[in-house]
Length: 216
Ligand SMILES: [Zn+2]
Image 1 (cartoon, helix red, strand yellow):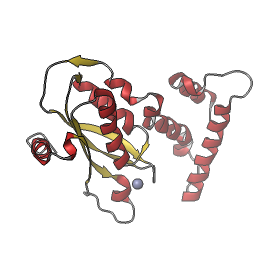
Image 2 (cartoon, rainbow, N blue to C red; image 1 turned 180 degrees about the vertical axis):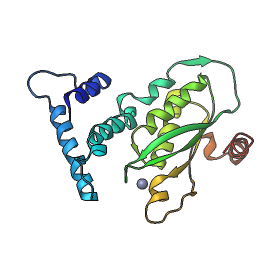
Image 3 (cartoon, rainbow, N blue to C red; image 1 turned 90 degrees about the horizontal axis):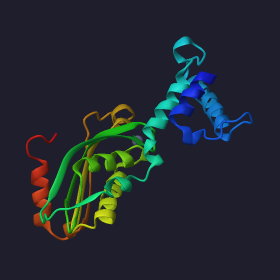
Image 4 (tube, protein in one colour; image 1 turned 135 degrees about the horizontal axis):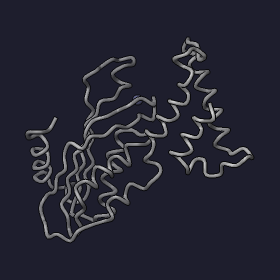
């Protein structure tokens, strides 16, 4: 990898390169090894890593992966910590929160929307914080099931509501492009906590609201 490329990375991700000195930093060794590994991968797939269009690909791949996994840099629960004391006893629903994640089994994208509902006891968080929460867990090596559970458990832990319900709908590129080639398959996962575990009427309210206009 070229030194100017390393500089770009160390500027954007200082925590990875915080000991940039004359003596070699462990991460620089890793970056070089990664670069070589991507070249090997290109070769294995049958192309020439030295041809023009592929020369900077190891750098671009690393940069992309650091972006896909930015969620590791911060505990997503932090986004929920600013709360308001608003007296509201009913459902708060935030639907169609878009997200992009990376399947940990194939490193291929999966993406879609998350719908979050909770019935507060005392604490309410800002609506935009839910988007950050979803993004914080999505930008990791993930599986959809864990993503769904982590979002629900974070809300449960920080906001301590009467109940939390999270539904995630996603398309997986590893299902679209490999083997079975089912381009339009949507996988739905849900996580129900607290009051939602044994109140089918509240679940029905949530499901009917996420299906109304504006939902995909
Ligand atoms: Zn996959």
